[in-house]
Image: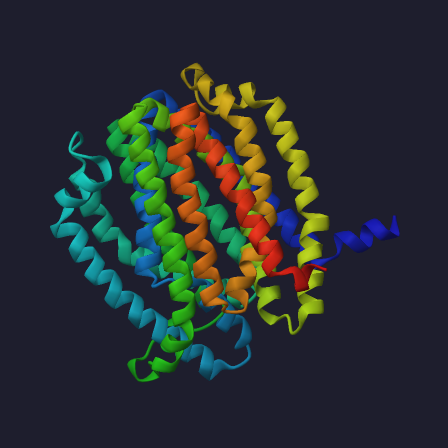
Length: 424
């Protein structure tokens, strides 16, 4: 009993419990939105939404210059150094605004071009990119503010912002899809994140006087130089990664049909629901810990804390998901999506490898290991693309999921070898 009380009082337990509620809520919201998606837009519409999400992920990283993880690190290190923290905030904010305005112009005036690139010439959703142009600056700033909150170790507030964002996303998605079908689904994807600015701005102002920190004379090129390594790492993973996924999905549409692409997006969406728990815990709790770890011994303790406390629970959850996959598909989607059931086994196997490697991969960001990260990421993306093409020709849509599992396994082995001193 005393041991249980001691565990429940730990910071990790409290954060995990709150995060579990947040993820549970997001999954519940995901169930509703997925059902609405399935009924109103079908597999083809979900494939188009997947393309837009991949594009938005790349755009998010470009608009924030890939500084997000760097901001978390430097805000964490300068929590008590007010003047340095103000320089970080002012410098990054000014850069983001300039970049976001430029990108917004490119999106708005070349909307037709982006429509043809993302949705092919068969669909005309140019209006989506014009709306995205107006929403992008607010979206980019909200990401930055959330990173500052995270760096200040305001874990509960970060998770609370995510909870509120999920509720906003649900309301916007249901209304837009109900009235505008596929167009509404696409518009909801670009509008919902921008609305989060109001929430993040409110919470950041309760911690620091944000507006008073944004002064042109506080701009410091040294900070940009320090953040540049994070920028390179983020641009490789968050820009090239979605581009590779976009290319694979377009190949699926070309060779297997848009519905098969929709099935792949469906299993990816289901996977993203349970991976939310891991990614949030890693970003909110483990990344700041790794950033301040002073030696291999401390890093090893953090790694094995993850493997002993988080990974076993995750694997147990995946076993339950596998045996309830038919129920999950009909709950989240419709009977039209039942072919997705045959994709579960390889998706779940691949996700075990992925989660096991995630904590190791975060060490790249925590310690600014830019060159090693870029090489490993480029290797992973290359393996993913070419193995997807190879296995797709052999096994159809299931081959793409097999390729993902294969890529995740190779990536895990590479990281285990590279970080062996932190593990053994």
